[in-house]
Length: 202
Ligand SMILES: [Ca+2]
Image 1 (cartoon, helix red, strand yellow):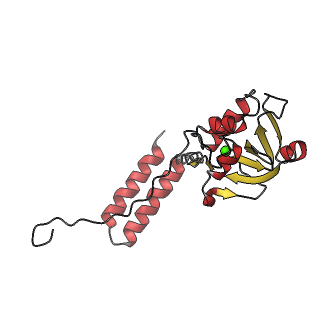
Image 2 (image 1 turned 120 degrees about the vertical axis):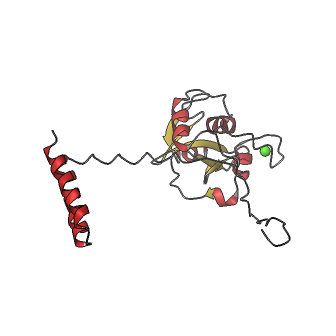
């Protein structure tokens, strides 16, 4: 506290909060695979429903909140144009009035509305909407309608194997040698007795 008694205030630069989807990438893959039917032509509604994202609104003011609006709503830094989308993110296609959106399953496959016929969700290759509907692949995004899709938490590290009796004896003997070398013969003797005790344990 400074001499005048006023507490020091630290200026903290806060990160701009980012909205996050309620499902992570792994959960989105599971949700997409579990979905079998869709309202025909409502690919954007289905995609954002799988991700748990809000509507992107009608960004280009053509009267529809569609896949094109969804793609336009993704922040530039979260858009990628490569053809290797990871699993659990939206992919987008242009080249028609409404465009198309689907969910990447990874490995070049997507889960797409109307791909099994009108109203039927199916798993097809990434270029299927291009070959079948004449669309153009635009890319994939880390976000869905601007909400960041979290990656699943890493698995907990494996628990270390418990030491065997022989290993414990070795560890304590080593500690005893170190204690002796460091000029603590009494402590070294106690450690050696302890090592003997461990060695005798059944
Ligand atoms: Ca629109």
